[in-house]
Length: 393
Length: 244
Image (tube, rainbow over all chains, first blue to last red):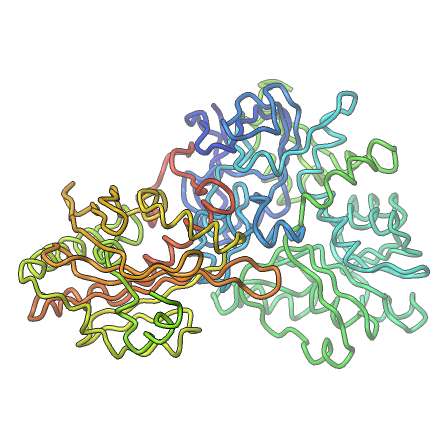
């Protein structure tokens, strides 16, 4: 089959690789009909995530048709159309039983690696370094799905791929970010980053009853898309975010702040440039300028919700502000299986159509070009969907 | 043996331990394809076989090892009383279930990756075969010396075995609804002399890691019915710079 293979920083290629096979009794093999490039894939492209190996197949937002089922998988049948969540969960450990699916004890074959870095292992992830299991990803024509009787969500006929594809990651991720804000009537939610997750978080915040959403970015087409979703937008390139947020909220500050940027924040402030230099010199691994702003701007007693990915060590986090203001932090990889079914129901009821973020549709062969466009925000690129079995688009 | 006697036997925990899995745990390579592990196995395997030939059983030498600090999750001690290792994992199942699975010793190779087979000879005695370098095997006989159903299993190798060790596994219900704490203790005595020192040095840290990985597989198997793996999945062309 063909697959998108990581070879090093800024080096991804489409190659012929062996087809996947069933390796464990609860596995399934999925023929992938649609797959997307995620903002977090750019962290891999940019070399920010450790334990990548040349030859790794990327991709964790995919869906398709079940073509093979392991002998102990009684939930799926050949021919089922499924969306596959990016987190892999066993369904039976303490954490899965508590709906903390992304903290699954049993799905990371490289648990010892994660234990060295984080103390305990979290769940396995598709196509996202060996620290989270080294599972071959879904930017490919086929993928093996472990514990496939837990994760994959069956999709009823009548819904197009593009309507449901983002149930694999960014819609539940944006939704959990908003849910973590514990939104009360009258609340104002500030969202840093208007990439795909930020866009989903903006719309989810409104679905959950937010009065106002204020989004922060500097990319014109992303700003426009956020405005279309009902958000007021601040451009960090030419506005003082803290002062503007304060002014817009009557001096109180946002009730909750969502950092949908993560470890590669591209701020325009001095600390952002310092972070960039430090990261380049390996003095820090992550660049948290959006998170710093969110902590600083959040109202007293507010919530900082973090769907943006962090992997290592953060420098100069204003912890004093967080402590003195009594902030609550909520974060982590998305507990996918808690959200997929209810969000599918919202899509079926027509409350939201997540395909609004798609700007580019490419055959898998063009995936390396898709990565570059997405990374450099060329051609107003916001979200790329790949079609693994189409050669000409 | 009554429960009281077992509890009172703390000061001689070796008597409650048994030890079949010396090579098992001691010489197991942490990850299969590492040449360092292979070298370690060679040295350890040879030394242990030599030791077995003496017929001296060092199990009792462990008497006095203090188990009062049993709550410590890790203890990998080496010295004149041999190597002592302790590891614990919490599994989302009942002590009875877990004990029942473990007591069927022939199933142990399903999660102890260094084992080839365990054959039950009679109710107490069993024959163990473990992997050694260059496709060879190390074998020994063991007997269960302590058994409290649903709670404790202790064993040791029999005299004249290649491998001399003692071990125990204890199943204790965790607080709240958190499953069962499975605690394994192993002790073995590396042979004296130069080669023994080498073995002790080589195995200084590995046994704990080996037991931890075995216990992890036990947990995975008990909770999910399988052990997660990526062995055999597709990948692209590899670079010579890969760390594995």
